[in-house]
Amino acid sequence: MTARRVLVTGATGYIGGRLVPLLIDAGNEVTVLVRSPQKLTDVPWKDRVRIVQGDLGDAAGVRAALAGIDTVYYLVHSMGTSGDFERTERVAAQNVADAAAAGGVTRIVYLGGLHPDTAELSQHLRSRAEVGRILLASGVPTAALQAGVVIGSGSTSFEMIRHLTDVLPYMPAPKWVRNRIQPIAVRDVLYYLVAAADLPADVNRTFDIGGPDVLRYGQMMNGYALEAGLRQRPIASLPVFTPWLASQWVNLVTPIPRSLAVPIIASLQNDCVVHERDIDQYIPRPPGGLTGYRRAVRLALGRMRDGDVETSWRNASIEGASSNPLPSDPDWAGHLVYTDLREKHTAAKPADLWRIIESIGGDNGWYSFPLAWAVRGWMDKIVGGVGLRRGRRDPQRLHTGDVLDFWRVEQIDRGRFLRLRAEMRVPGRAWLEMTVEPAPDGGSIYRQRAVFFPRGLGGRLYWFSILPFHGVIFSGMANRITAAAAASKQASVDAEAAAVDTSLPAGKH
Image (tube, rainbow, N blue to C red; front, side, top):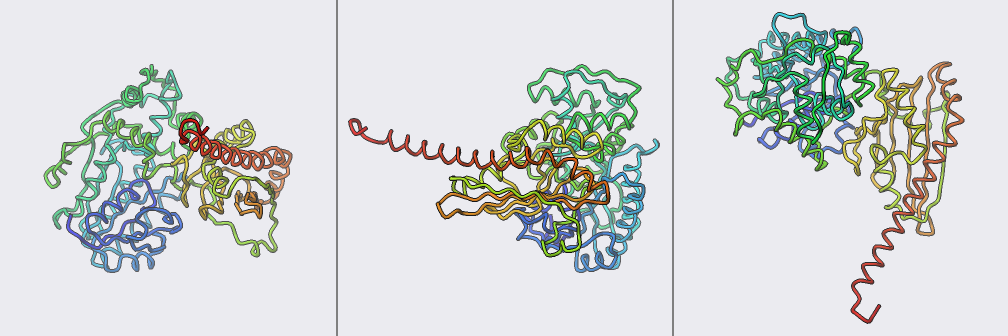
């Protein structure tokens, strides 16, 4: 790849977060345009890029961000379901198209969706196709890559396949499990994206990209089962499973929230296969060839076992979830705010206490009344929320912007402070804070604060309806977190004593 000045939109997303370091390593000067720079606080490449805060809906801001840029990567796609998201996407694409043409950009690379040419498209595929047409009509040479199901650790499609197969020994499924699909490994998508920047200047068109295998969705599930060491699942195609009903089913039996399940399932209503391989005339296939489906699954599972998942669907912004940070305490004046405060002393050192706090959630649990947390998660799922099973990307370490079950990390001062912002569906905005302070006796003080800004009468009623559970949930959290930290400290002391004891010469015990 020829070194150039590159701007990436969607750098906080699944593909963008993996593409940026590849572009940097290729010698490019990379700028990222993001709405929330705090999401990049802990990414390893933060200090190697120029970060510009902005929104694609702001034409003036887009023009300023594209000034002096050679190549633009357009990787933004709304996963919302509100009626005006198609208009929002049109406006964003047109702003980029106009700014690129005016600013002397020499290449746009867009990642869209693989779709049939004749069938009626879902709302999301229709919108993605329209974005491609707008960029292709910009006057700037554009490569619109069209990919289908992307298979990689943390991708939404892979996680849906994984959870459906893991959870269900028998799969009642919609008739689209019989449709043909041509999945592509995320590594191959990234390969084509990087290489597309060097296409000849006269190339302005769409390209279908896909892996070497054409499969039915049911075959993909059973291919995953074989790689995961599971029995193949019997699958029954039932005509009563409408796309709407199927999305509710996926929402309930997997961690994928309804807002993400709807567009995925809608895109599976037709065959989704490559119709032309013209990309081969311009870009050679990856060294070793395209990655087969089973190998892509094997690689994804290996990344998960090693805890090496770079980006994940979990960190996608969820429609309807609050993205506003907690106001500072003085700004609460004039607002109705409910809080629940807990404080607990422990003999554990601050480092031991922090280790417990940073590993909370996911498979490690919440240290308080698991049934109550599970019920709250199911309630959220039923009303279309994210539920409690999104888990966490890394079992031990958190970063700003990470998802943690139905929370998101809003602020982390490692070793001292963690603030989580609620993304469950509630009539208001909620946060949970955990603070560690050294105690004079060498132990630690644990402080826990839940904050709720109610919205209307419903918010007030909600807070008081769950107030009886706070004594169980929040008090239990404080007690068990500090107890776990103390137990961790004692285990370390015992291990050190055992090490000293075994190191003594014979006769000195």
